[in-house]
Length: 488
Image (cartoon, rainbow, N blue to C red; front, top):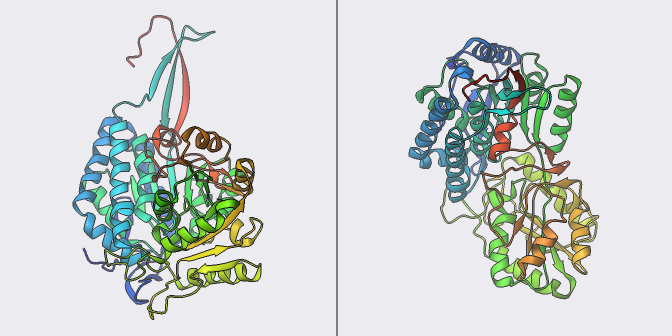
């Protein structure tokens, strides 16, 4: 499916002329050419979308359908995305530069798994439970949809984030105003079409691509009951503050600076090839990327040599080429930001072991060489701040306790990993590192059946698993008379 222009916004189940006249130009990060345009949403468009969502929630059929009926819609959406997997992957690669192989698996296949998971969870999740009370003979504890949800997504894994927010919120019975990033509107528009084809009732979903000011209007809107945000720490703090002022529910999935601890008994021949894809996935533009590599001092040079060799073997090039492992970053501003970190690392005394600039072979496109810094102190800017690019730092440590100390010496706590020949020893370290997700000799950082989220400045709340659904539900206790059977 080729990317095409849209001249309307998806509001309440219909394609509606925008209130404004501005457009968003979608620029290919590999060719630097405008590939399409969409309307730039305004506050007035948000008002329309919230009004439609409010009506659909307060008076429409969606919250009153059974969870199984809502799950059937999610299953249909998953099936259609699966049927269009190649086209959807190509759209995302064209939008933001993700290598097509990763786009197919991580950007499209994974979202189908999320939709299918929640479709199946509809059959078993306990929305109602009768408990024996202490003061009442029995109490019905019921879980009801939180209401109208404002969902705000970044550009790095757009369809994945859409699935993470829409699947549980819609299964809960909520209605949603979804604001994709301006860089990646097309997968969201196609997803809206797929939901319509699957039979989603009018008003339940709107899609409004727009910038930050419009996002803030959505957050502050009195008709919105909950905000679900994925993005930067700066944005998360602002949104969290606005929600706090209004006592509005919010889930914040923010950044990371994850540490991969390589213990002194690790087999580097298997560790490094498994670690590198988790370190430079999606051109380094992943919140869970293992970008701090902690190496035992006695094996530091050995780890660096293996890591540099692995990074040197990565194929950098056209993201549409299935052989490409590292494509361009999303935008010129993002490349400039990354280059600022490369300069900072050199200025603070770190050494570039490989990379450190732009690939000489790529004359067009916003490419950054996969880079490894050595002689890094964890206090350096490149070790503390989320670069969001293909840049790794290798930090030496002495002993397991110091490895844990360094891993925890971060404002973030989203993900991490430990690599060892002794699983018991590794699990002991995993329990000490303050992150919401962790890998012990494992190549897979996220499992959709279990909660995902962060400690500290990596966020508030959890996505995926039953916990992800629970975050879109309000709990209500109803005291019941003795002997009454509520039919639960």
